[in-house]
Amino acid sequence: MEWLNYHHLLYFWTVARAGSIAAASQELHVGRPAISMQLKSLEAFFGTPLFLRRGRRLELTETGKLVEGYASEIFRTGRELVEVVRGSSLGRRQVVRVGIADVMAKLIAFALLDSAFSEDDDVHLVLSEDSPRRLFAALAVHELDLVLSDVALAPGLDVRARSHRVGSSTTTLFASPELAARLAPGFPGSLDGAPFLLPSRESAVRASLDRWFESERLRPRTVAEFDDSALMKVFGQAGRGAFPGPTAVAEQIVERYGVRALGVLPTVTERYWAISPERKIAHPAVARIVEGAAAVFPS
View 1 (cartoon, one colour):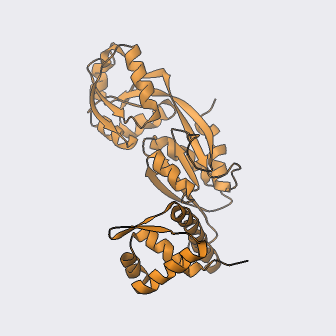
View 2 (cartoon, rainbow, N blue to C red):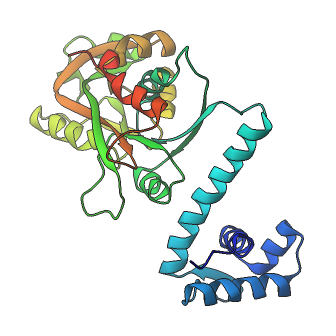
View 3 (tube, rainbow, N blue to C red):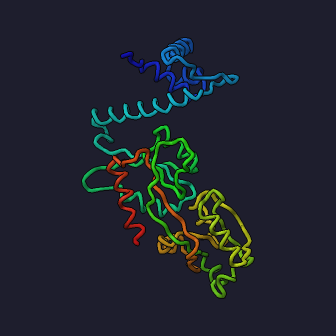
Protein backbone atom coordinates (compact mmCIF):
# COMPACT_ATOMS: atom_id res chain seq x y z
CA MET A 1 0.00 0.00 0.00
CA GLU A 2 1.31 3.45 -0.93
CA TRP A 3 1.09 5.85 2.01
CA LEU A 4 0.04 9.46 1.80
CA ASN A 5 2.66 12.03 2.84
CA TYR A 6 0.92 14.13 5.46
CA HIS A 7 3.52 16.89 5.30
CA HIS A 8 2.60 17.36 1.65
CA LEU A 9 -1.06 17.31 2.61
CA LEU A 10 -0.53 19.97 5.31
CA TYR A 11 1.20 22.30 2.85
CA PHE A 12 -1.58 21.77 0.32
CA TRP A 13 -4.28 22.39 2.95
CA THR A 14 -2.60 25.60 4.12
CA VAL A 15 -2.30 26.91 0.55
CA ALA A 16 -5.96 26.02 -0.09
CA ARG A 17 -7.09 28.02 2.93
CA ALA A 18 -4.66 30.91 2.43
CA GLY A 19 -5.36 31.22 -1.31
CA SER A 20 -1.74 31.55 -2.42
CA ILE A 21 1.70 30.06 -1.91
CA ALA A 22 2.98 33.42 -0.67
CA ALA A 23 0.38 33.60 2.10
CA ALA A 24 0.97 29.96 3.03
CA SER A 25 4.71 30.60 3.15
CA GLN A 26 4.21 33.30 5.78
CA GLU A 27 1.88 31.11 7.82
CA LEU A 28 4.13 28.03 7.72
CA HIS A 29 7.45 29.89 7.89
CA VAL A 30 8.62 27.82 4.92
CA GLY A 31 10.10 29.13 1.69
CA ARG A 32 7.91 29.34 -1.42
CA PRO A 33 10.07 26.97 -3.52
CA ALA A 34 9.76 24.27 -0.85
CA ILE A 35 5.96 24.62 -0.76
CA SER A 36 5.76 24.52 -4.58
CA MET A 37 7.78 21.30 -4.62
CA GLN A 38 5.54 19.74 -1.96
CA LEU A 39 2.44 20.62 -3.99
CA LYS A 40 3.92 19.11 -7.15
CA SER A 41 4.78 15.94 -5.23
CA LEU A 42 1.23 15.66 -3.89
CA GLU A 43 -0.28 16.22 -7.36
CA ALA A 44 2.06 13.55 -8.73
CA PHE A 45 0.96 11.19 -5.97
CA PHE A 46 -2.72 11.67 -6.85
CA GLY A 47 -2.03 11.81 -10.57
CA THR A 48 -4.14 14.93 -11.15
CA PRO A 49 -3.87 18.72 -10.68
CA LEU A 50 -5.24 20.10 -7.40
CA PHE A 51 -5.03 23.82 -8.25
CA LEU A 52 -5.73 26.13 -11.17
CA ARG A 53 -3.91 29.46 -11.34
CA ARG A 54 -6.13 32.55 -11.56
CA GLY A 55 -3.81 35.55 -11.70
CA ARG A 56 -1.95 35.67 -8.41
CA ARG A 57 -4.36 33.31 -6.69
CA LEU A 58 -4.75 29.57 -6.82
CA GLU A 59 -8.18 28.00 -7.15
CA LEU A 60 -8.99 24.42 -6.26
CA THR A 61 -9.95 21.97 -8.96
CA GLU A 62 -12.87 19.66 -8.26
CA THR A 63 -10.40 17.02 -7.07
CA GLY A 64 -8.65 19.69 -5.02
CA LYS A 65 -11.95 20.53 -3.28
CA LEU A 66 -12.43 16.86 -2.45
CA VAL A 67 -8.90 16.56 -1.05
CA GLU A 68 -9.30 19.81 0.92
CA GLY A 69 -12.45 18.47 2.57
CA TYR A 70 -10.75 15.28 3.68
CA ALA A 71 -7.68 17.24 4.83
CA SER A 72 -9.84 19.50 7.01
CA GLU A 73 -11.32 16.46 8.72
CA ILE A 74 -7.89 14.80 9.13
CA PHE A 75 -6.31 17.82 10.77
CA ARG A 76 -9.34 18.56 12.89
CA THR A 77 -9.19 15.00 14.24
CA GLY A 78 -5.47 15.41 14.79
CA ARG A 79 -6.01 18.53 16.89
CA GLU A 80 -8.59 16.76 19.02
CA LEU A 81 -6.21 13.81 19.47
CA VAL A 82 -3.49 16.12 20.80
CA GLU A 83 -5.96 17.79 23.17
CA VAL A 84 -7.11 14.47 24.60
CA VAL A 85 -3.66 12.87 24.97
CA ARG A 86 -2.05 15.96 26.48
CA GLY A 87 -5.00 16.46 28.81
CA SER A 88 -5.55 20.09 27.81
CA SER A 89 -8.52 22.15 28.90
CA LEU A 90 -10.57 20.51 26.17
CA GLY A 91 -9.28 16.99 26.77
CA ARG A 92 -12.02 14.49 27.62
CA ARG A 93 -14.62 17.00 26.35
CA GLN A 94 -16.93 16.34 23.44
CA VAL A 95 -16.36 19.02 20.82
CA VAL A 96 -19.54 19.48 18.77
CA ARG A 97 -19.52 21.89 15.82
CA VAL A 98 -23.02 23.11 15.00
CA GLY A 99 -24.12 25.43 12.22
CA ILE A 100 -27.30 27.45 12.78
CA ALA A 101 -29.30 28.93 9.91
CA ASP A 102 -29.27 32.73 10.24
CA VAL A 103 -33.03 32.98 9.70
CA MET A 104 -33.80 30.43 12.44
CA ALA A 105 -35.19 31.77 15.72
CA LYS A 106 -32.30 31.80 18.19
CA LEU A 107 -34.57 30.90 21.11
CA ILE A 108 -35.54 27.73 19.23
CA ALA A 109 -31.87 27.01 18.49
CA PHE A 110 -30.93 27.47 22.15
CA ALA A 111 -33.73 25.20 23.35
CA LEU A 112 -32.55 22.46 20.99
CA LEU A 113 -28.85 22.89 21.78
CA ASP A 114 -29.46 22.89 25.53
CA SER A 115 -30.28 19.19 25.20
CA ALA A 116 -26.65 18.52 24.23
CA PHE A 117 -25.48 18.99 27.80
CA SER A 118 -25.53 16.03 30.16
CA GLU A 119 -24.42 15.50 33.73
CA ASP A 120 -22.48 12.43 32.64
CA ASP A 121 -20.07 14.19 30.28
CA ASP A 122 -18.63 17.54 29.32
CA VAL A 123 -19.58 19.17 26.02
CA HIS A 124 -17.82 21.98 24.18
CA LEU A 125 -20.11 23.57 21.56
CA VAL A 126 -18.58 25.46 18.66
CA LEU A 127 -21.40 27.44 17.02
CA SER A 128 -21.47 29.25 13.70
CA GLU A 129 -24.24 31.10 11.88
CA ASP A 130 -24.73 31.36 8.12
CA SER A 131 -27.17 30.72 5.30
CA PRO A 132 -28.43 27.11 5.02
CA ARG A 133 -26.71 26.75 1.64
CA ARG A 134 -23.29 27.58 3.07
CA LEU A 135 -23.87 25.48 6.17
CA PHE A 136 -24.74 22.45 4.05
CA ALA A 137 -21.53 22.99 2.08
CA ALA A 138 -19.55 23.03 5.34
CA LEU A 139 -21.33 19.86 6.43
CA ALA A 140 -20.33 18.18 3.17
CA VAL A 141 -16.61 18.67 3.90
CA HIS A 142 -17.00 17.61 7.56
CA GLU A 143 -16.43 21.07 9.02
CA LEU A 144 -19.68 20.68 11.00
CA ASP A 145 -21.21 17.84 13.03
CA LEU A 146 -24.76 19.16 12.75
CA VAL A 147 -26.83 21.87 11.07
CA LEU A 148 -29.99 23.32 12.60
CA SER A 149 -32.20 24.89 9.94
CA ASP A 150 -35.74 25.81 8.96
CA VAL A 151 -35.26 23.95 5.66
CA ALA A 152 -34.35 20.33 5.03
CA LEU A 153 -31.47 19.20 2.85
CA ALA A 154 -32.56 19.42 -0.80
CA PRO A 155 -32.46 16.02 -2.59
CA GLY A 156 -30.31 17.38 -5.44
CA LEU A 157 -27.45 18.53 -3.20
CA ASP A 158 -24.32 16.39 -3.27
CA VAL A 159 -24.11 16.04 0.50
CA ARG A 160 -24.02 12.73 2.35
CA ALA A 161 -26.34 13.66 5.18
CA ARG A 162 -29.79 13.03 6.54
CA SER A 163 -32.45 15.54 7.58
CA HIS A 164 -34.17 14.80 10.89
CA ARG A 165 -37.37 16.73 11.46
CA VAL A 166 -37.23 17.85 15.09
CA GLY A 167 -40.46 19.79 15.32
CA SER A 168 -42.72 22.51 14.01
CA SER A 169 -44.49 25.58 15.33
CA THR A 170 -47.29 27.88 14.33
CA THR A 171 -46.51 31.59 14.09
CA THR A 172 -47.41 34.38 16.51
CA LEU A 173 -47.25 38.07 15.64
CA PHE A 174 -45.70 40.46 18.17
CA ALA A 175 -45.33 44.22 18.60
CA SER A 176 -44.00 46.71 21.12
CA PRO A 177 -46.55 47.70 23.79
CA GLU A 178 -47.24 51.08 22.12
CA LEU A 179 -47.72 49.57 18.67
CA ALA A 180 -49.69 46.63 20.07
CA ALA A 181 -52.14 49.05 21.70
CA ARG A 182 -52.87 50.44 18.23
CA LEU A 183 -53.02 47.11 16.41
CA ALA A 184 -54.78 44.84 18.92
CA PRO A 185 -58.27 46.33 18.28
CA GLY A 186 -59.50 44.93 15.01
CA PHE A 187 -56.65 42.42 14.61
CA PRO A 188 -55.82 41.08 12.07
CA GLY A 189 -57.48 43.69 9.86
CA SER A 190 -55.53 46.40 11.69
CA LEU A 191 -52.34 45.09 10.03
CA ASP A 192 -53.37 46.59 6.70
CA GLY A 193 -50.96 49.46 6.13
CA ALA A 194 -49.27 48.89 9.52
CA PRO A 195 -45.45 48.84 9.80
CA PHE A 196 -44.15 45.30 9.57
CA LEU A 197 -40.79 43.53 9.91
CA LEU A 198 -40.34 40.45 7.73
CA PRO A 199 -37.88 37.56 7.59
CA SER A 200 -35.98 37.47 4.31
CA ARG A 201 -37.20 35.42 1.37
CA GLU A 202 -34.52 32.87 2.25
CA SER A 203 -36.65 31.95 5.26
CA ALA A 204 -39.05 29.03 4.83
CA VAL A 205 -41.78 30.81 6.79
CA ARG A 206 -41.73 33.90 4.54
CA ALA A 207 -43.73 32.26 1.76
CA SER A 208 -46.37 31.13 4.27
CA LEU A 209 -46.62 34.65 5.67
CA ASP A 210 -47.04 36.14 2.20
CA ARG A 211 -49.83 33.66 1.42
CA TRP A 212 -51.57 34.48 4.69
CA PHE A 213 -51.46 38.22 3.99
CA GLU A 214 -52.87 37.57 0.53
CA SER A 215 -55.67 35.33 1.84
CA GLU A 216 -56.63 37.99 4.39
CA ARG A 217 -56.31 40.75 1.77
CA LEU A 218 -53.84 42.61 3.94
CA ARG A 219 -50.99 44.82 2.76
CA PRO A 220 -48.78 45.78 5.68
CA ARG A 221 -46.08 48.36 5.08
CA THR A 222 -42.74 46.53 5.00
CA VAL A 223 -40.20 48.49 7.03
CA ALA A 224 -37.30 46.03 6.78
CA GLU A 225 -36.43 42.44 5.86
CA PHE A 226 -33.96 40.39 7.90
CA ASP A 227 -31.68 37.41 7.48
CA ASP A 228 -30.99 37.57 11.22
CA SER A 229 -34.10 36.70 13.24
CA ALA A 230 -32.60 38.10 16.46
CA LEU A 231 -31.98 41.49 14.85
CA MET A 232 -35.58 41.53 13.60
CA LYS A 233 -36.79 41.15 17.19
CA VAL A 234 -34.55 44.02 18.35
CA PHE A 235 -36.15 46.26 15.72
CA GLY A 236 -39.57 45.05 16.87
CA GLN A 237 -38.67 45.79 20.47
CA ALA A 238 -37.87 49.37 19.43
CA GLY A 239 -41.36 49.73 17.94
CA ARG A 240 -40.29 49.80 14.29
CA GLY A 241 -42.96 47.31 13.31
CA ALA A 242 -44.89 44.17 14.13
CA PHE A 243 -42.97 40.93 13.55
CA PRO A 244 -43.49 37.15 13.48
CA GLY A 245 -42.02 34.55 15.79
CA PRO A 246 -42.54 30.88 16.67
CA THR A 247 -45.49 30.22 18.96
CA ALA A 248 -43.40 27.51 20.66
CA VAL A 249 -41.25 30.24 22.27
CA ALA A 250 -43.85 33.03 22.43
CA GLU A 251 -43.58 33.39 26.21
CA GLN A 252 -39.80 33.74 26.01
CA ILE A 253 -40.06 36.35 23.23
CA VAL A 254 -42.53 38.42 25.28
CA GLU A 255 -40.37 38.19 28.41
CA ARG A 256 -36.99 38.81 26.74
CA TYR A 257 -37.97 41.64 24.38
CA GLY A 258 -40.74 43.29 26.38
CA VAL A 259 -43.24 42.96 23.53
CA ARG A 260 -46.85 41.80 23.38
CA ALA A 261 -48.42 39.00 21.40
CA LEU A 262 -51.04 40.19 18.90
CA GLY A 263 -52.35 36.81 17.83
CA VAL A 264 -51.55 33.35 16.52
CA LEU A 265 -51.59 32.46 12.82
CA PRO A 266 -52.51 28.74 12.87
CA THR A 267 -52.00 28.27 9.12
CA VAL A 268 -48.49 29.77 9.11
CA THR A 269 -46.18 27.03 10.35
CA GLU A 270 -42.43 26.67 10.45
CA ARG A 271 -40.61 23.33 10.51
CA TYR A 272 -37.22 22.75 12.07
CA TRP A 273 -34.59 20.27 10.98
CA ALA A 274 -31.39 18.79 12.34
CA ILE A 275 -29.14 17.68 9.48
CA SER A 276 -26.37 15.26 10.37
CA PRO A 277 -23.61 13.91 8.06
CA GLU A 278 -24.57 10.29 8.60
CA ARG A 279 -27.65 8.11 8.52
CA LYS A 280 -27.18 6.93 12.08
CA ILE A 281 -26.52 9.72 14.56
CA ALA A 282 -23.43 8.39 16.36
CA HIS A 283 -22.26 11.47 18.29
CA PRO A 284 -23.88 11.26 21.77
CA ALA A 285 -24.37 15.01 22.08
CA VAL A 286 -25.87 15.26 18.59
CA ALA A 287 -28.21 12.38 19.39
CA ARG A 288 -29.38 14.16 22.54
CA ILE A 289 -30.17 17.30 20.53
CA VAL A 290 -32.44 15.34 18.19
CA GLU A 291 -34.03 13.25 20.93
CA GLY A 292 -34.52 16.28 23.19
CA ALA A 293 -36.62 18.06 20.58
CA ALA A 294 -39.75 16.44 22.02
CA ALA A 295 -39.43 18.66 25.09
CA VAL A 296 -39.16 21.78 22.91
CA PHE A 297 -42.09 20.85 20.65
CA PRO A 298 -44.53 18.82 22.79
CA SER A 299 -47.24 17.21 20.70
